[in-house]
Length: 403
Image 1 (cartoon, rainbow, N blue to C red):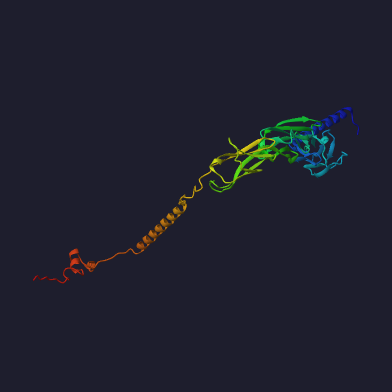
Image 2: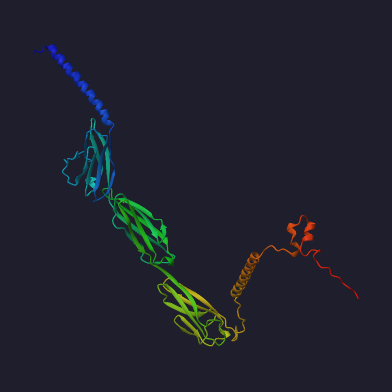
C-alpha cells in the first residue's frame, strides 16, 4: 500500500500523540513512586570495627535500590557489588531492603553514604558514618611525688589521640574535683586533651587515691589512678602505764609517749614545763620513770616529738596526793541496780492487782435473802410481806419477864 505525503504526516502526528500520552502516563506513575518512603540511619562505629548500612523502602513498586559511597560510586546495585572493595558485604536483600556491612572501618571511610531508589526522578536518603577513635591510656603526672600537709599539689592528666575529643573528670576518694581542661586538635580531626587540678592536702589525704576518669563514646571505664603521699608532723599522746588510779606519795610513776608521723619521728624528748626534771628521773626513749613520788614533783611533764615536717607535743599534769588519799571513799551506790529492783517490784504488784480483779469479776452474782422467799406469788407488796418466810406472822413471839 502506498503512503502519500499527507498520510505520512498523519502517521507522524499519530505517533506524536501516542508519545505524549505515554509520557503523561509515565508522569502519573512518577507521582505514585514519590509516595514511597525511603529511609536509612546514621551510623557511629569504632575504628577497626564493623558498620552496617541499611536502605529501607515502604510500598516499593519494584523500583531498584542501590547504595553509593561518599564519592557517588555504586557499592551495591540490588544484590550485585560493582565496587571491588571486599570489605563491603551483602547482609540482606529484598525488594524492600538492602543491608550492607563494612568491616575494619577506618577514618577514610567516614562520610555520607547514599541510599538511592531508581525512580524517575530517583529518590535518595543519606546515612552519615561517623568513625570514633578511643583515646590511649591516660597518664597522670605530678608536680612533686611527695607533698607536705598544708601545701598545694598539682596533677596533670593527658588523654591522647581521640576522636571526638575526650572529656576528663577528677575524683579524690569520694570527692569530685574541678580541673582546667584544654583540647588540642592534632590531625585527621584527632584530639589530645589535657586536664590539670590543684588542691591543698592534709594528713588525712595520705594514701587517698586520685582518679583521672576519661569519658568517651568509644570506650568505658578508662581511668588512671595515683595515690597521694603526704608528709605530716607527729601526733603525740602520753599514756600512764603506772599507777592505774591516784598518784600518791611513795608511788612510782611510769609514762609512755606515743608519737606517730610521716616520716617517723626522729627525736622524742621529755621536759618539765617551767622547772627541771627531778634528778632521779629515768628517761628511756619514749618512756619516763620516776620513783618514790612526793609533792615536790608536782607539775606539767611534756613529751615533744619532731620529724622533717615539724614538731608536736602532749602534756601530763602530775599531782601527788597524800598516801591515804581515796581510801575512805564510801562505796558507790549503783543507782541503775536500785532502779531495776524497784521496777520489778512495781511490776509484780501490778500483776497481782490484775489477777485479783479478774477473780472477783468471775465470782460476781445475784443473792436473795430469806425475807424475799414467796414474794413472787404475792398479788401486792403487803401480801408478799405477810406470805414471806421469816415474816412477822411466822416469827415466834418472844416474851420477856422481869422479876
